Image (cartoon, rainbow, N blue to C red; front, side, top):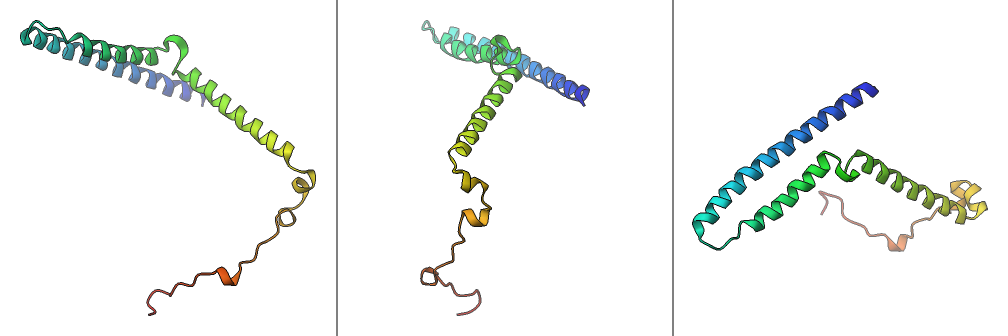
Length: 131
């Protein structure tokens, strides 16, 4: 089972790298076109703004794919998962600590009395088909 999991993770990594390369190719092609349009358009330079914004997106994509800095990778996900589970376990321990001992040890039927419906509060709806 461990070998299968490693194979699936490797396949996912290769797919992520392939998607990143496609992103870089699209960036280069579109930015080349925009540089040409900016050159023909006139002396005012504006192409650096989309190049900068999209370039930051490419850098973030690279960081995610190649685990640069260790964030957004599988280790980060595992750390976050353990943090969430630890917080939930601490909350359960705190709730059980605050619960009175007799209520915690009593059977459910004794701890919470059964509530009977009040006939004065019931709303009656006609059955379908009866008028």
